[in-house]
Picture (cartoon, rainbow, N blue to C red):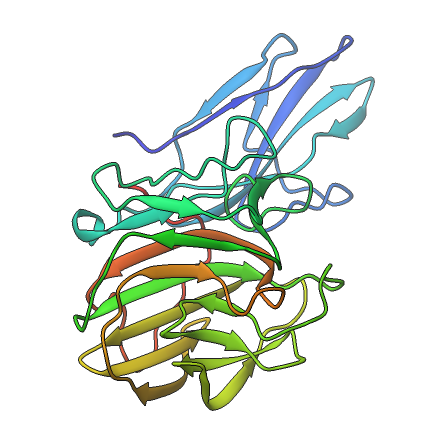
Length: 288
C-alpha cells in the first residue's frame, strides 16, 4: 500500500493560483513556510505521495488572488503504523459514526469480542476530537461500555485516550475509567485524581489528569498483579485476587460514573508495553 494523503476541497470565485502546504509543525499563516507545491487555479484535489507513516503532518491549502493569499483551516493527518499485535486484539472502538450523535459502537476487529453499551454513552462530534473524528461521551449516569472478553487470570492490556471536561455535568465523583474488579477510579470528590482500584478499594498513589488534556490511560494486569499507567508512566502496581471476567470502560456506583470523553478504546491479550513504562501513543490507533 502506497502511503499518501488524498485531499479534496471547494473554492468559490476566481484565483490566480493555489498553494499546498505540508509541515511537521503547525503552519503560521502570518509567516508561512515555502509551499510544498504550487497548483493551478482549476485544481480541486491533490494526492500527496511524499509522506511517511508515524509522522504527524499539518496541512493547508491557500488561494492567491491579486497578491492576496487566503488559507484554509489547518488539517492534521498521520498515516498509522501497522499494529504488530493486531492479530490478537480483542476490541478496538473508534469514536466515529456515520451520523452524530450515535449509539452504534463498532468493533474494528471484526472477529473480536462483542460490545454492549448502556444508555449514558454516545458518540458525538460537538466538542474537539481526541484522535478519532469524534469522541465517546460518558454522561456520568448509567455510562458504561462492556467488552465480552474475559482474560480471567491471564495477562491483558486495557487502554484508552481520555479527556476530563473543565465543567462536568455531574459533580459526584468516584468514577471508574476501567472495570469494577480491577480498574482505575477517581478519588471520592475529585474529578482529576485517578488511582488503581481493586474490589472497591483504592490502591497506592494517585495521578493527576489535567482538565481538557488528551491523556493515554492504561491498565496492564496478569498473574495476580495489576499495573496502572498514565501517558506511559507507571503510577502504581498492586496484587489482586480472583478472575477478571470482562472488560468495562466507564462505570462505578450509579450516579457517580465517569463523566467525560474517551477515544481509541482497545483491549489486547498479553502485556502490550514494557511493564516498567513506555512511550504512550499520541495518534489514532491503527486497525490493521
